[in-house]
Length: 306
Length: 247
Ligand SMILES: Nc1ncnc2c1ncn2[C@@H]1O[C@H](COP(=O)(O)OP(=O)(O)OP(=O)(O)O)[C@@H](O)[C@H]1O
Ligand SMILES: [Mg+2]
Image (tube, rainbow over all chains, first blue to last red; front, side, top):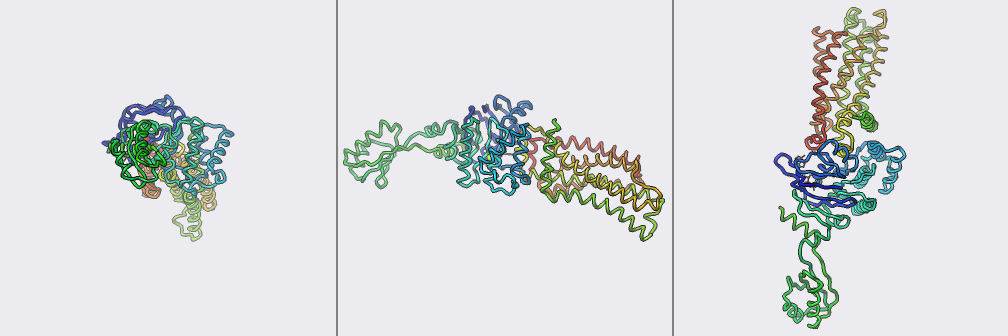
């Protein structure tokens, strides 16, 4: 649905987005992560045909960005929630949506129905006749999402939709995104929230002017090698520790009743370690394997590129 | 370019204006002043019988000078409307999602122009009726006939006024692209009135005559200005410019 190849944007001497090649399939939720100034918003703006690319190419639904006909076709099949919501503050919530519906030539009945549907889904129907300017940040954010969906677009671009939201509103928005995913919409999501990306995205890209990596959240965690095994015992004593030291485990540490070490293949390596502990008289309560988190991957990649 | 879409953009602006007292005032105040004030001045000077101003010989000239204020008003009113409707959107950042829709730059710009032109013309034309009735009522005794309506005022209202409105709207677009808030857009906007005030002053000292021929010449000059401003404003009103340079 979205494909870019060596997409690049320069503002004068500053390269904001450098040679980005990525692919988002139909119905996927793509999470775009990266530090402030990484070029996420600039990428969305290029893909929505709001600003020109400097070089490279990109297509959305098969239409090419950067030429007039393509841009017009693309703008018909996308919805955008910009980073600052951009509502008309002196219009009611209803009129904000109604205007956008009319832009896309929907029939009156169809438009009325989708306005009602989205406002109800997002809990704003009661407030439909209030001016958007009187809304709280979270309500504005939700209204902007409804606005971007009013014409039933195939692709939705969301620029940090849960920034500034309280945990509950953020959750509503996330659940709403998952709801849209069920409707097979392709979603391009800029976010700083790693946890959010991990929970709702099928694929993640980490950008820092250049695209550092793309993959599923699980792929990315694999990327930073090494897992950790954490063994919790009734009691840890010298005998157990010296038994373990003979096994030359990596990064063996002991803290209270917990023993931690790195493993690359837990299925094979954990068995031997646990056996050694038991033979040394240890009483093993639990054995846990933890992978590196998306945060570890993110920090590693962003630091590498800095 | 689809007119229906430009109209859609304009009607959204009309809805917004209804919630904006400042805009409503800026549309109404000037027409009310000129349509009520000028007849009142005449009435007052006649009552005092202080001759001069209301002397029958100079009255037609004086009335033509008064009517030129309709051109000044036509250039003044759109400044407030257009600067709000464009700078206001800039402040609200509401142009970005709008530009991500299939509307073309031209349709948005035309919509913005319509939303400034129509209220101005409506206000000025309504005021012109009050003005004509008021002036006739105060001068018919002296002149022995109703001075208005006449061809000179007709040319002024139907040709010079629209051309001046368009000039002001296009100029407002250019100013709005550079201004950060409505107030500064308005203060730069005022510059467009200077040439018109200059014409008025030149007519007062007798260099230009404000009759049919004079008005047609003024309309011709303003039209040329309109064409020039059209090219500058459409260059300023392009999505890339708006998003990256309009700060
Ligand atoms: N109109 C512009 N003119 C000049 N430079 C720009 C412009 N827009 C963006 N930039 C620069 O491009 C770079 C990328 O900006 P962008 O807004 O895309 O970052 P981002 O990843 O969205 O950051 P954030 O997480 O803070 O939203 C920044 O260095 C920014 O200063
Ligand atoms: Mg951003």
